[in-house]
Length: 214
Image (cartoon, rainbow, N blue to C red; front, side):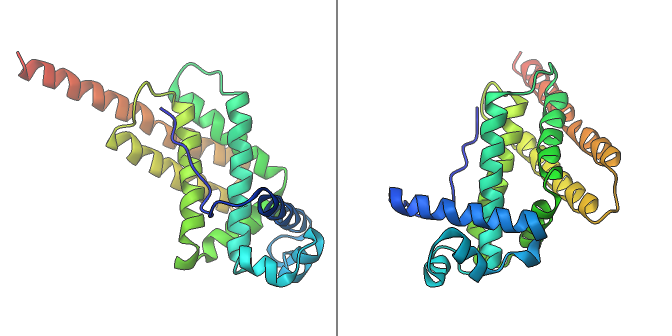
């Protein structure tokens, strides 16, 4: 079963949605050129063709805007992964392959990746809905790659959260120059083995339950 993640925004008209997309595209372009500091609200407004007051109605701060930009980037990644899903047979390998594809997509735009990750780090409670949507999208990407036949178990969801935390941490350490791509790959492959552990635990519990029912 696939977890669907919906944007943490109110229903918008077609015109409002088009305006929002222009704002997000402008944010991504500026961040790609110069990172977090290059995203100035006045420049975003000018580049997207909206009034500054209108921009603030959509996004109260630069942090809100950049977290929403990450949400938008993850949605595009999710769509691309659904069109070309991982081909490996084992769920563990599929998830690792998927996360490395997502990582390499961010690697191609290091300034943008750094800006979005910094925004997530700076986010306070006022940005919780946007941060939650980013988390739900990441969860959806991982669950899709796992290819479950039914709803995830609590143990599987716990493993997914740990995998998410590791992927996010690996992204931070790479952006700060404290980890190589090879190290990131090893960390992601290692944490994805939790999927095998939850599968074995589930099989063991099922076998125990069958014996008790005899």
